[in-house]
Length: 95
Image: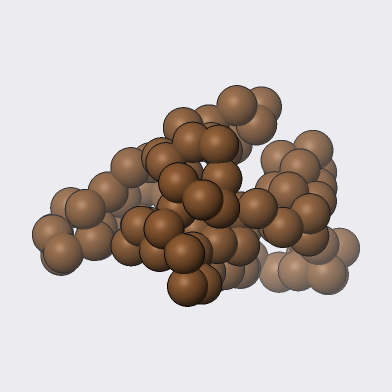
């Protein structure tokens, strides 16, 4: 939000794991970014283990992509991050 208010041409990068998606702060950040149309990219790595338990014990959906896709104003992407070229293309598109 600060970059927007200061008129800067910047994109903020936020990286976390799927365990974060069960925290209220995560949803507040996503909702705020969507509502204000902020230039932020949230990258959530889903390795199927949220902190120390399997993702099925941490959240209702095992797909973080589907879990966050319902936020209006966001463009979700599902990417295999071991595929460098696809990851690069998607990040470029997101920016």
